Length: 301
Ligand code: A3P
Image 1 (tube, rainbow, N blue to C red):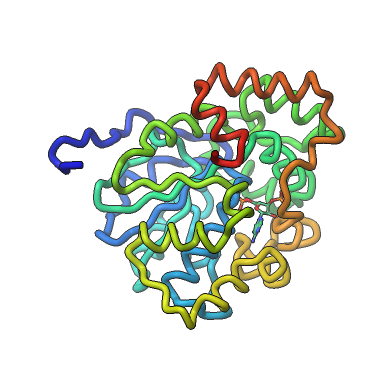
Image 2: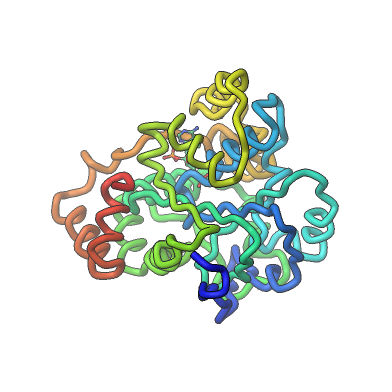
């Protein structure tokens, strides 16, 4: 694809809520080798950050990945604090975002990796994240100046009711799911975008890591493979969760191990009724189109 003929995404709006401040991207200065890790949420962001850190640092142990890879559009701490810290980074940067493409400033020189996950798995992961959030989480999101819109409240007691609300109110109480997935799906052909799926990453982690390395122009020395695979495995990440989870897990009862929770898909299968599950599938097709819905609900195939 010739660079001149590419139509690059353009920012068309700001996205602000209890979590987001998309305006930070307006003041962010890109470097030619920047990597942006994007997901809706609860879709393998932290796993991908770990993988990218392992590729950049060649299997090194003990990296403080959460500090090295900040969630740029999270509105706390404020951009006045976050931007200088990101500017001061000496290593190849890998920045996390949960924004849809049209609320980002998209750079032709950066590389973007997006990871998707079946919405039903996302809700199961999100419920655990939300139900175990402690008072520091609520304070940070609701009471730090600059919040736009209503506060985030405690979740309902039942995961099925939580799922219903999330589906009926598109991502409630977080942000729209369908527009996030669709916006990234639509730019998947760009030369600096790589689309991944949580299910496929679980199935073939080594193959997907190689794909990520190729995309980032990183060569993996054969002697590094064992360390990389160990450090990206679920068991290792759970054991060392405080390194990769934001603030070492201070926002959750049970700490960082609450965040790196089960690491498996399909936990909704025995709990959701067939009707509830099929409603999700119908909505996915309606909101995303057949091809994207198939990709999302079928582990990226
Ligand atoms: P579960 O809550 O289903 O266990 P995010 O980082 O986007 O918030 O996603 C969190 C989800 O990714 C959690 O899912 C977490 O357990 C899972 N995860 C983190 N590291 C993983 C790994 N190495 N392998 C598989 N899943 C992982």
